[in-house]
Image: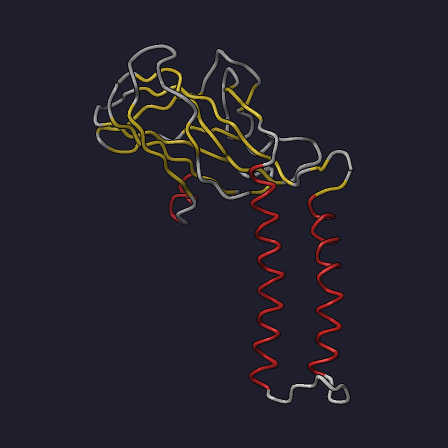
Amino acid sequence: MRSIAQLIADKLDRVAVPVDELGDQLFTEDNPGYISDEATQEAIADVAATSATILLEVVEIDQHFHNDENWWGAVAAPTESLTIDLNVNRPFVALSGNNAWGAGIPIIGSRDNPVKPWQTKFDLHRVIITEPTNATAWRLRFLYGDQSLEEAAQARRYTEIMFIAVGVGSNVGGPPLDVRFPPIPVGWRVWAQAWNATDEAQLDFFVGVHGYPVIEYGD
């Protein structure tokens, strides 16, 4: 069983050997392949650095898509420290403002661990709407940080989705919706705010998360 970090290290080791040998040939004056032009040397070094960066990005994208997913509902009385619970009958509930953002509600608290015990980071990956009160256009915003909702909003640490509810009432929210969200440390908080044209329109939903690092199973 190897972690993604170990896989990256293995791949970088395999890349580093030929890159080092190439460097000896091109950048060491005693070797026949020596290139004296400094601009060319720098260009070659940039290519090697870019290759390593691309490899890291590819592995990060790969672990985002080939990952476990954990779904959460709300505890009976969510707080800033504890909010999540494994259930299918107690969603998070957000109320909209009057054609504006409504009050923020805690989604993941500072003492919550929404992922596996060995994982140190997570991202909010998907959300499923279960009971909207209005079959109109909605905006749903998720804010994140290690301090307060107000600080997160001021620092612009948030992501949004927009959708039109397919109906009104229970279990008519539609299929899960993808959320664009950066990996953040376990222990950071996440809040949600809803926006609808109707004041105090209600939106019920559950959230799904990814955890990092990802463990590779098998050979």
